[in-house]
Length: 105
Image 1: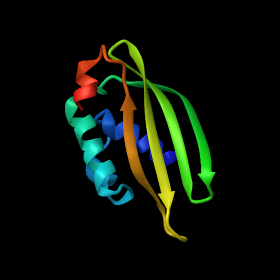
Image 2: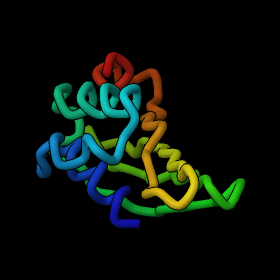
Image 3: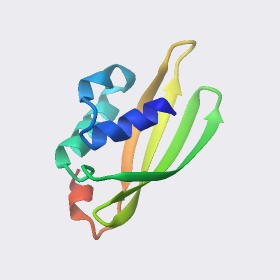
């Protein structure tokens, strides 16, 4: 999934956020901005992408990210309205309590 790769690149500061703005709703974009601004994902390694389609117009994906010497899980939801392009409607990092920088993001 190209969009998910681009989202992770933006979180890590390797892709400008404005490139992704048209592909996210407002809430998801603001969450992505917070994660990018936190700097917690500058040196991130991704692995284990899993996806499912609960409906024909929705994709839910999870991706493991190695950051701060720990694995965290990043989850995304993509929705499609009609025949239009896919839109990311949810971005969230599920981090253990031991990583306060990620929880604050």
